[in-house]
Image 1 (cartoon, rainbow, N blue to C red):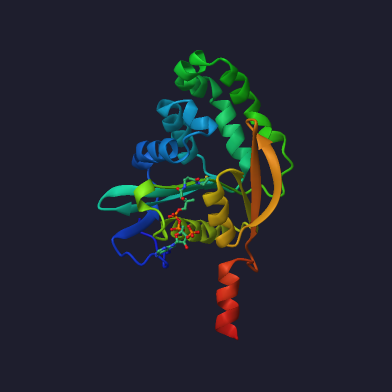
Image 2 (tube, helix red, strand yellow):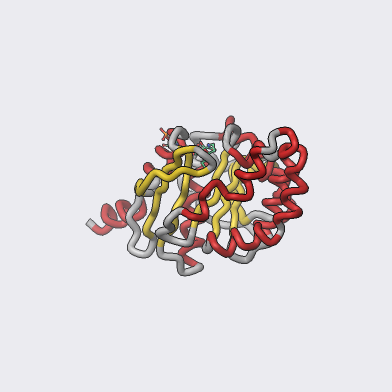
Length: 221
Ligand SMILES: CC(C)(COP(=O)(O)OP(=O)(O)OC[C@H]1O[C@@H](n2cnc3c(N)ncnc32)[C@H](O)[C@@H]1OP(=O)(O)O)[C@@H](O)C(=O)NCCC(=O)NCCS
């Protein structure tokens, strides 16, 4: 399926579409490379592949990829219900633990972190809908691909009648925090996940509070 969106990408060589099962290996690799230093990539590529296979098959989850010259340059993955998504992953925890086994044996402390969800599940949720991950390949950044993927996700959230969504990102990931803020998400709180301070940001859809609202207001003025 080819989808619209990504209007801000000036480079016509880039196309956007809903993710397919066959994108899972590329998505897992991009997650590992783009979010190096965060906890999940430490659990290995097999773990990430299995996690994305499960997410791909979860009805509450949707994703898009950006493609250039036949290869995946970026992806975004969102859920309309974090609780439902966590339940799906918990049901398959033996499978996931098995995939993470080599990494867990190397550092057993990771088992506790993995099973506890890093305290994430206990955090007060303002909304159930969540942007789970967005990654653009290093050499493809700053060309509007991230913004295009985010725009497609907003449209899909709206189509699924979601009024607002959140994203949780490491506080030290200044580039990503700035990316979200530039795109209209609003900083709400700092929470600790897997021992790291994370910024929680929200965007209200519906009436809209981000760049689209500004565009509408400029148009209507
Ligand atoms: C955060 C991330 C997804 C942004 O992706 P991106 O494709 O670079 O995002 P965009 O191109 O839309 O915006 C980034 C910058 O490019 C600029 N830009 C956007 N479109 C542009 C265009 N057509 N031409 C030139 N510059 C452009 C934006 O103004 C923005 O500028 P800034 O860096 O000064 O804020 C990317 O940096 C990434 O993959 N990071 C690692 C993974 C990560 O941290 N993900 C978030 C946590 S899940």
